[in-house]
Amino acid sequence: MSIEYAAADGVARITLNRPDKRNAITGEMMSALREALDRATDDSSVRVLLIRGAGKDFCAGLDLSEVLQSAEDASDAVDSARRLGDLYIAMRRHPKLIVSAVHGRALGGGAGIATASDLILASESAQFGYPEVKLGFIPAIVFTMLQRAVNERQALELSVTGEPLSAARACAIGLINRVYPDQEFDAGVGSYLAALAEKSVTAMSLSKALLYRTEGMSFEASIEAGVQANVQSRQTGDFKRGVERFLKRS
Image 1 (cartoon, rainbow, N blue to C red):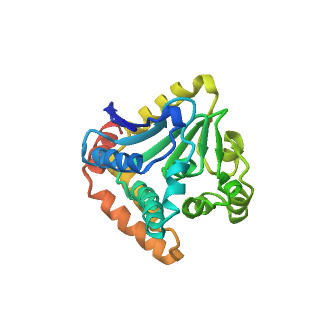
Image 2: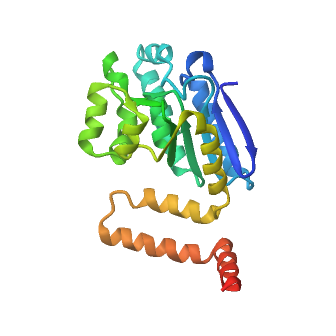
């Protein structure tokens, strides 16, 4: 199977599972990943999702043999590109937090999967890159998310040079959240996910939705969106139980 799925302790663990191909993304793999996302949506025990790669790398990007084949027909090319774009949209619209844990290389569309996640953790030796330019190609779909994660000049430089980015540099420019020493990576990811899984799933979901909803809004519209989210959060069971616990301790 190109995607493995397992859920335990509030975490749905989704593994990109083509290690012999550095987890290169095929059409079948995108469909399987969408199914895994839907499965986690429907599982009330899941509070947060984790995406990892099997083998030495997180994901080397799109399977180039499929990309080249689709280039022979314009409609096939559109379908292929839109399938990837729809995957990224599904990740951003997913009601639960998605965390990517990156080791080895995350390149092209694979870096896109990480960037489409809500939070990114990386091992110290991990590398990120958008090397499409070296093939006469461009990271066009990933660019939408990249320019929101870093500033415009950094996004453009990453796209036109295709040079790899170390985990430390990726963290410094705001592309990723945390970097762990290689020998502590698995433990660090486990602790991070366990802490998230203890948080209110409704509060995390509302925070995620508010973040992406307010992109591009005016200041006034963004404040109003915050007002509505504030009111919505007050009406959740998690909020009421949380306040009751706090007041009992006071």
